Image 1 (cartoon, helix red, strand yellow):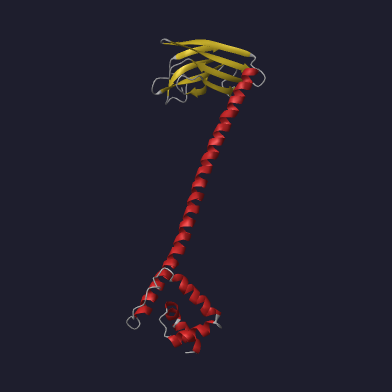
Image 2: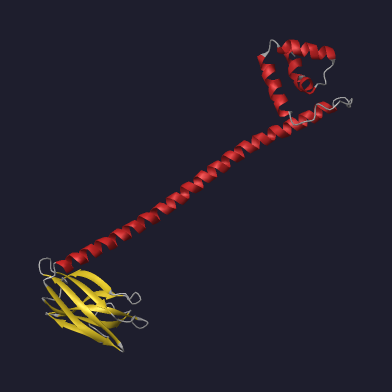
Length: 241
């Protein structure tokens, strides 16, 4: 045991004021030349500020004060030991949660933006065909008491059509409106049109790659499970070029 060990052992005693007069004077003289002990005493006094040390002391059982103070300090130290990691862990969790939420949201936003861009491009394409339409074909459609129509804007330069179906009620359950190209080799399926309330149905399309020359167009109501073959449902409109 070197001389400094005594001061290490009695730091708590000095900080809590339980050293005898001579030992206390010896410790204070040591503090004047020992930065390490000064810093440790300052830390202990900081930790003990919440204790009522200003109350007039009562002579404790030998060693009791040291055990109490040690327990307090160990408790507060251990508290700090888990509080800091816990705080750091909570901070990391919040940052990670924000990162995950952000990275989940970004793809959704990107998907939504892409969808809006696609719809905007489709609308611009449709309007460009309508502005440049060389011919406009139209036919009336009667369904019960509803009066609607089929309108086709043709672009002779790009060979695209903008098709508008308006005024029709929603198709019966299990069916959908089906647009057809009437070609020299038979009927070729175009777009399947799902009704959205009472809003007009609109799309722009190029000419089919098969079926021969396009001679006209038709609109029918087809079963939802029919995605190939000739028309099976009721014909609503028929237009020839």
